[in-house]
Image (cartoon, rainbow over all chains, first blue to last red; front, side, top):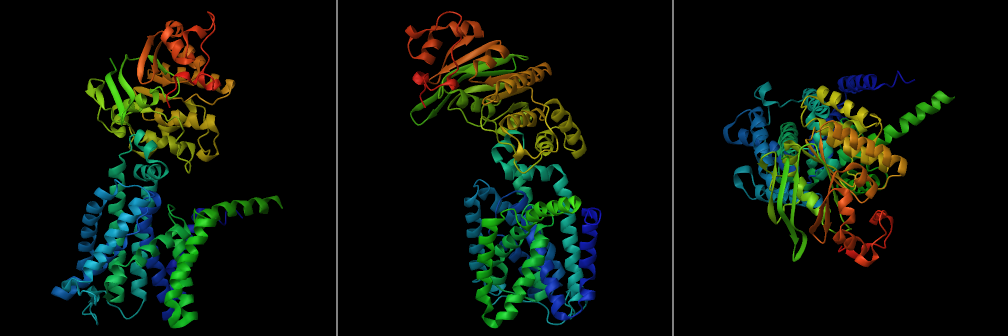
Length: 325
Length: 259
């Protein structure tokens, strides 16, 4: 029993499942859900680095997502460049923004940090909505038909699925490496108690800054992938607060501060969202908010550690029972 | 001289928590800081650890001025400290807690883990135990283990032995002795006179922000000002041979307390 469910085997099954999902479920609808799950897993895992591991709950990560989403389409609109060119530009801008935002806001702790990040993200959203160069309130569009593969504009969902899966794989590999290194230990120590961490020589500000920069870079990549796939971006879908909230909910549902928590959260939440939208039709947009609110209440009340922690608690019990009988 | 604190003062508004305290620590010493509740020991202690910026005065460690240095810079310089209320990292195992400290001088994970394991063995803890499942004695021990892993030259212990049963206390005293034998200089804030009398060769007594006495435990215990600080009146001096009762053992000695 134990050998079947060992972590290594579980990881293998998960990887195999993700790899073969679009081949088994070849319908456009299912593939679309698959891509949405991967995108949610990417941005939630990116948020998780600073919000989960370091415990600095940013509610303004849409600023990085939006930057990453706007740059590829902006470069295309202005100069007709391939959207790929915008990805590194988005990363660099996001890291720069992270440094600028981090310096003043990391002086704040707890709720104050969260509120400051909301304020900055909203400011950028409003600014983007009035700036004509970036399409103001209307937003920007990508290439309608691909001039070549480098436009990353495909009719099928399949290429997107595997590009997103590769990015998620890279992100989780980096996170796993981080978890084992000094950097990861320092992040967990900062989350557990800054005062104690400091007394042990942990350079708190610098470590938080590195975490925010890394998190911002990957959030930006998630934004770029979203914009390239959708071929469209506007202030709300890029910089809107709901984008930030979704990152937090996906990560918190699965388990913030754990490697696979965000992926687990995405696997549950995205299909659930699609289901509510399908069941309730056009009136479903308001229901998304209700669903989010309900999930926040349930997580906060019953399982602050997320489903991953619940799993860790329940599974050993079942093993024990299986061995006893 | 390892640590030289001169004329250290700390005010909160018009209140002088510490006024003009001096402390010189030679390498290899164990020095005790005692005094009634609210006497300014902890504030002075936090100034030494870099947690509180003194209003006036100068603190030199190993020839370098550390008065305005951050707590993390203190740790790097070789000043380690524990907290009065344990601040163990609850969601981590004992070993992971200690590894956070070990990473300061051992950036690579395997080195840090080996070093942490040695410290965990030395302090008699269980490496795989979750920190949250530890009781008070375990937490205090883990705090000491964690800071030991940073290889401090000077260890500041803030009531690390308070709240222990007599047996635990004896184990803890033995641990402090072992740490001292490793060549680590120790400054210890403590209420329990038994600890102070057995461990320290030199004492500083705080009262209302001032250092009112210093010297060997034997002379300090007989000092009139010290007795007055603890008991309120010199007339209530205990007969010779009776040690001053520890303030933690009852509420009746709060005459000198200003908190």
